[in-house]
Amino acid sequence: MYGSTAYNTDEYRNQITDRREHEAAAKYYYKCSDCLAVVCIIGRQACPICGICGGGMREMGEVRGAQSEHHHSECVCNEACVSAQGPDCSCSCGGVNHGIGMMGYYDVVDATGTVKITAPRNAEKHLAQAQEYRAAADAATARIQARYGDDCGRFARREWIADKAIWSRINNDLADLHNAKLGKLHKSRVNKLDMICR
Image: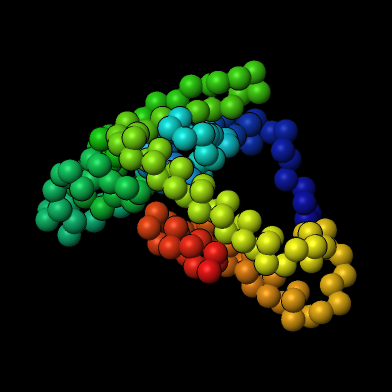
């Protein structure tokens, strides 16, 4: 019978418990959206904030080790694995040592359960990057608003804009702003934001 899976069975509850235990013990990578700090911590966290700049952090994934006979015999666990900038491991450790040089810590900072994750390295550099990024993003947003005036507000409220060319330019500029904010490298995203200001 379709849809007859019983979610109250002991088997289902055991699967959920096993998954939660795995997530609590596994290593996960997170990256700050503003300062681009990368950190590896034990345990999955929901909606953490950066302990360096206060920006939102996004999960990059769980550490995964993909051993093969070829890699096992040729690729030795080294600094590239221990201080890796992402969750994928292909060396002989199979993920056991992966990211231990990037291990950070986290604190629950308020009653809502907000988690602040702090990266172990280069806090000053990352804070400076966050400040430069935020200034560039604010300048680009202000430039778009100044360029289109009231039409920008109408676009945001999804109101009618009679001139289709203006609607199209606002849409393109806001798409460029969004794509620049998603950049993975600091210099390139700041350059894209600066281009919007021109």
